Length: 105
Image 1: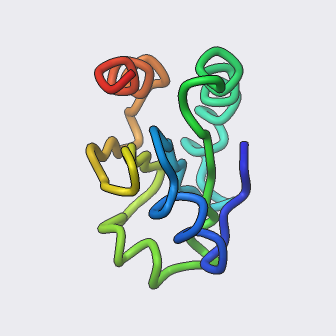
Image 2 (image 1 turned 180 degrees about the vertical axis):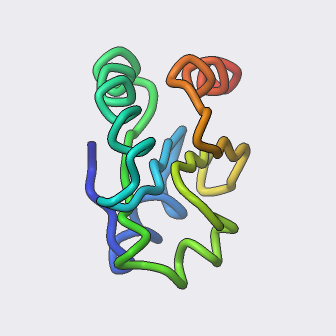
Image 3 (image 1 turned 120 degrees about the horizontal axis):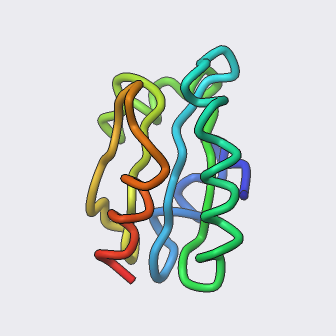
């Protein structure tokens, strides 16, 4: 998974062609840590169709707010730089993320 920063977010996500999944997280978020291995599995499974990225919002708060991410874990799906869908919440499952991705693939 590509590690995003406030410096490369625009280039890697907003200027990207095709599908991009961004995992918004913080290092101290237990649900974020719990779902990460499953998201990495999805990255292996769909990596040829979707660019998988993650952004530590504790280092990019303004960027997260601008993307309307108010809590973690949160996943945004972008297509050709436009946000298509947001999935968020402590009870979020990798299956939910996979189903959402399939709708755009």
